[in-house]
Amino acid sequence: MLNKALHTSWLRFVTLLASSFLGAFAINNFVVPQGLYNGGLLGICQLIRTLLSEQLGFSVSGIDLAGALYLLANVPLLVLAWKTLGHTFVGKLIVCTVSNSVFMVLLPVPPQPLIEDVLTSCLVGGLLNGFANGLILTCGGSLGGMDILGMYLSKKRGFTVGRFAILYNAVVYALCLVLFNANTAIYSAIFSVVSSVFVDRIHQQNITAQALIITKNHDPELPRRIINEVGRGVTAWEGEGAYTGDGVRVLCICLSKYEIEQLQQTVRRMDPNAFITVQEGVHVSGNFPRHLS
Figure 1 (cartoon, rainbow, N blue to C red):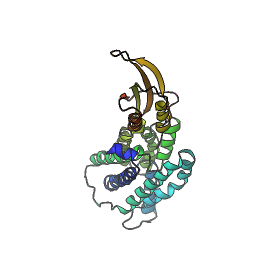
Figure 2 (spheres, rainbow, N blue to C red):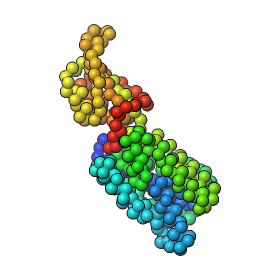
Figure 3 (tube, rainbow, N blue to C red):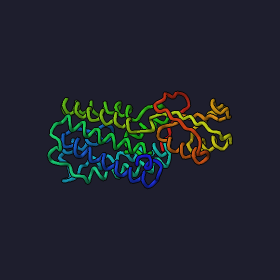
Figure 4 (cartoon, one colour):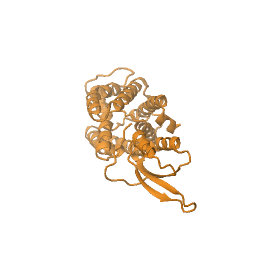
């Protein structure tokens, strides 16, 4: 199902909406009822919402203002995304950001936590939120906020989105420590770390793979198709089958796990009998662009 969602436009759209809902559900049901705070830009919006409510007495009955504030705060970041991350990505970003913000506003926050134990709430909420964010990133979208900078650094500097999230979350939870208390900051940080680690486990674009294709098809059109359709470079050399003595061509491609199925489809169309091996988790340095969608 996940692989189909990655390569079918309407399934990607459904996955983005479902993941946006799951992320909002995790925050509204496991984070907010415990008086905890999300990381990143949403965490800042939650802090502002709390200060508006407690210090100024400004609140709207039945509505979490953090979702509305988060949507407004994302507007200037869309400009950065439009200029640096591509128009297709920005389209998905708008879908995810708007839907997630609306879900956070509309989903009711239970008066009592679903799970009384604060640590368990952090772990369950972090797993659900990280799973949702990882799916969104894998489908080429984003929930906006500081994830935009994380995706930018992932593309330009090789950072993973989850690791970058841990860094900027430290600032948010330092504010929680100053404004509230140590328990609030510590449990909020636990939620954030669990969520960020799970994002990197789900986000397949951060998993690098090496594919070897052994084929008797010596037509130069095959590597050209791979370059054009998958968007990765190809290294080719001539080989010989040890058993048959027949001449073969070996193609070597480094790519992300997200692109493996596209590579296999491209090769099978040109040579159904090609032998393909894939090794995941290889280390890559040098000119290896990270594709965002």
